[in-house]
Length: 260
Image 1 (tube, one colour):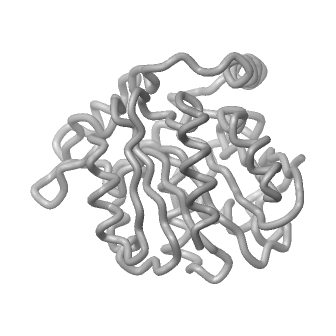
Image 2 (tube, rainbow, N blue to C red):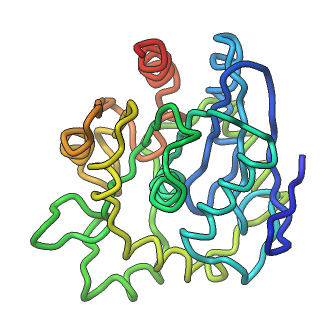
């Protein structure tokens, strides 16, 4: 399915099932097929699952427009409006979670029942106020560090069906890291801790115990900042938790969704 944003960009998404909508947002450089292992369990539990490819990713248009988190948040707001969703659950991996925090900051919580953050610290840069940033990113080095490949995000082999779906999407729509570099810079400079402090709906932070990007303790600390925060650290996986350990992740996810 396709939608056209207010700045004229075609975004690709799929929309399956009925019931309470849950929107899935992928990290930078990824595509919506990374959520393959979550689709059937969520549909079986009666959720409506909407998976969105961000601009410059997957089957969505590649463009110089809107290479900033605020525009990605606006894209999310526009798909919620276009689909006439009065309420939804938002789940994002990596920068997909940052997009959700930006959405909450700009558009509030009127349409949001709950949030699930999958391995994304609310602050990317480590400084005297925050010890849980991305790798060794600092205010002094982030421009240069982010010019280089981010490195492997996973430590476990993905299930065959997920791997094949992701690879097919990558081949059909190759990712251009150089094109999206301004977005990565914008992402890196944000601090969403104030958004967490003011988010009063249920919020789950899931971290990979062996994440190559973040100290998994960020999940516990972030949950403590959030009035109704919870956290889980999943062993034997890296950054793409839902794809590396889908059985454990899905159990935690469905338990969280059933708890409120």
